[in-house]
Length: 361
Image 1 (cartoon, helix red, strand yellow):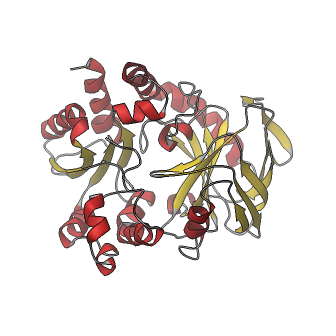
Image 2 (spheres, helix red, strand yellow):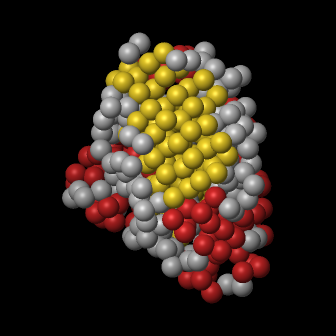
């Protein structure tokens, strides 16, 4: 076994989750990640806890049920989680998703209506995580499908993934704490980039540093902006807006009074509009994230990595983080990445703090 798998499992169990004796730990993955799942289970056992392993076809967070079932089941069934799953979600002590897809577009054949119903079914579980009621981590295991999407060989993708995840997270946390401190002290943040001039408020809101805990790889500082204060336009022109299994090009959104009032895309616009209309909170900005992982420099068509690209920001429509003062509720939380390295700026209360992806303090 690749020795990095053991280090990866240790990071998940001991740092990201800090599993305690007697805990029930939900593990969602696929059979392709068996080496990592086995090692995670072994370490959970050594900590005197219980693994609740669920292996699906894709192992991705956003397709928790087999696509075959989701295609065939009555719609009224899709909106409700299976009672056994619901009980597990309500009583589990920690949650980990190890994405290991055989096919990264599995589930694409599901209609928008069926995807929306599935999102409703998993809303309670997602709320437990986003509110940090339980420790959780979402990560990926290198599979040929993920490597192919990234235009890499499997060996290259393995090196990339482990290089991004197996870092000195204590040192990274110290570096990112300085960024958090600067934005914590700001009332207004302005984002300027290609086709983009957006202002948002962080008044009274404090950020969080992701240094190898909730997401792997870590490497971001993130906030829940004031819900009614986002104004301007953002154009995600550099990278597609990707949320498995959907990929949209040229997403452009106009905010007024904190809400998206205009939205277009050069491809996938129907998916964008359907998502924005899923509920009342879907058109509100739920997150500002600042990518800070120096081990990630290129777009991978995988948001878990792309949102951490050093010199980018990501903006999520939908649910905010209640632990960070966020008040917006939605079944949606969709991160879209904006590259600021080619001529972009970040301003805090009118002062330029980042230019061309480089910090000025």
